[in-house]
Image 1 (spheres, rainbow, N blue to C red):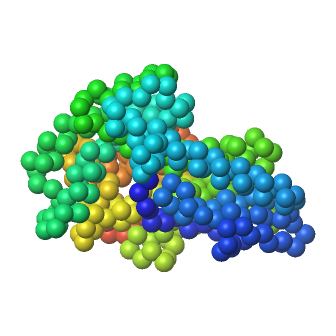
Image 2 (cartoon, helix red, strand yellow; image 1 turned 180 degrees about the horizontal axis):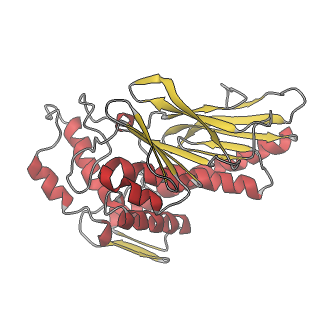
Image 3 (cartoon, rainbow, N blue to C red; image 1 turned 135 degrees about the vertical axis):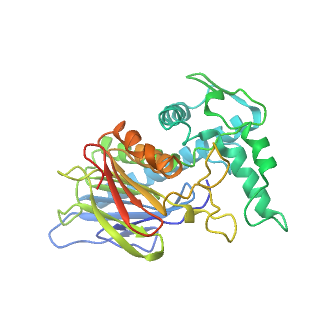
Length: 338
């Protein structure tokens, strides 16, 4: 997975600098925190549970699950399932997690009219190689190179079955970077809930919360100001309380810049071959991190006029759009734009 800057600031009750750290709040269960990296991003998992030993053992299980899922989705591990699919053009007996996430991705591609497209990887590689070469134009590859590569970008050319995946055009390749962090976040949160942990915050670059903090209050997350990354412009409750949603994800061009021009970044429009610059950032609150992650990518790239219609296909969701002039606009799947 590509390295990503942090778009969301998490307000938890224990700030741990070491991989393992626990702090006792007065008359409250013991919060236990793991911090590290996952899917190319800084990551943390916070558990509120009275049994510290059990919580630490469960966190170790979560870390093993993170490593297992990276072996499926990573583009930087040559033996990952996704890398093998890209190298061979087909993959018999794919892991069910790959099938599940790819099915969601192709559905979102269809609903977003191709704004979200997991076959964008050849275009990303074109940009990465262009900027890695001495003397590459600061505006990106030439139109002719982009046109050639776009012939290999089309989500409709992916054949997906439970027992087989094939890329129907030579030179095609997939990336799930626009949704995999959210999916892995959900997998970890679901694993913890199934193990009986009901007060949890999973933050793998995208966030999902269960229950409450050790002080009984809602977990909270802040949306970072794209123009001043040390500043938070809006803080939201996360969880299942009334008025809140459990998951939050943000997409922003500044997360992965190719060169010195801030308008040339990883949010590439598969229809034009150029970076989309409709917004400075797009944050989505949803019931699951997979959906929040995928929608934040799709809404960043798709035409603004289609944003409301796409959002309404996935209630309950809420979107926080930071416009190019820095103003925030909010869309809600069940309400009119504000």
